[in-house]
Image (cartoon, rainbow, N blue to C red; front, side, top):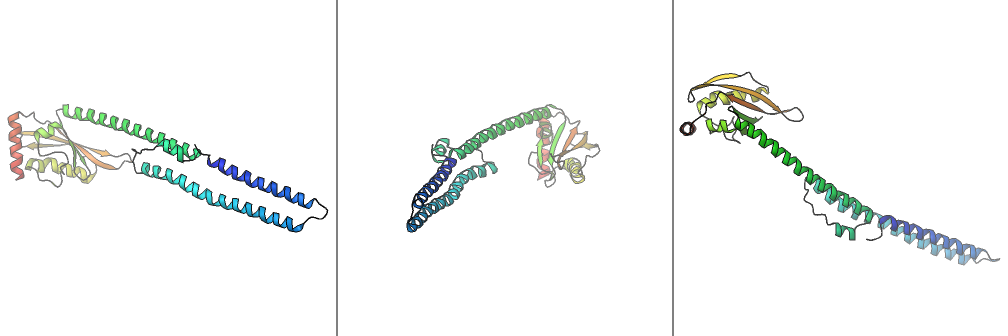
Length: 260
């Protein structure tokens, strides 16, 4: 590894100090005689001052260039991290050859931090997927139907019971903008719009669905984000019938004809 930045600056400072000591020694020697040569003293001062000026110019020029190069390498890594890009290939072997050791330790720490972030992201993603699958399994095992919609009316999730009974209510469908069969339009859609526009939980409604020949109860709950802002709602449909395969096909045909 190359000399560190601190070692280089220390060397230059020691060099300037040595030049000053040499200057003082020469001047004392020249002035020690009975008749000192003032021209020699003057020339010595000029020469030593010129050497000190050269060293000072080197320091003034070197420090900004060195710091710019060192911080520029770290800036590129931090810029990628700030954008959420964590698959950064930090070649430590190359940095160890070309980077000052003080700054190399920072780059090494950045690489370790990236590893920790990637590991945390993976664990977080795994845990979110695990909880999502658990909740999805629970919702699919229940006999009730569940719709999760955002505050724009887009269906985020519909469990198997909903899809079996109302095949047209697929995920990513906008319940506000889409056209559905009359019983969905007059009951589920109307109720969902009321929940979204009011931004609050609505009282349960017990509505009759002609094609199902049953009364279905609609219930609602508001979903909020981490700041407490409303980001959607959950609509529950209870008392849904268990449809046979023939009934599912018949229900699907009814909805397809209604959508034409």
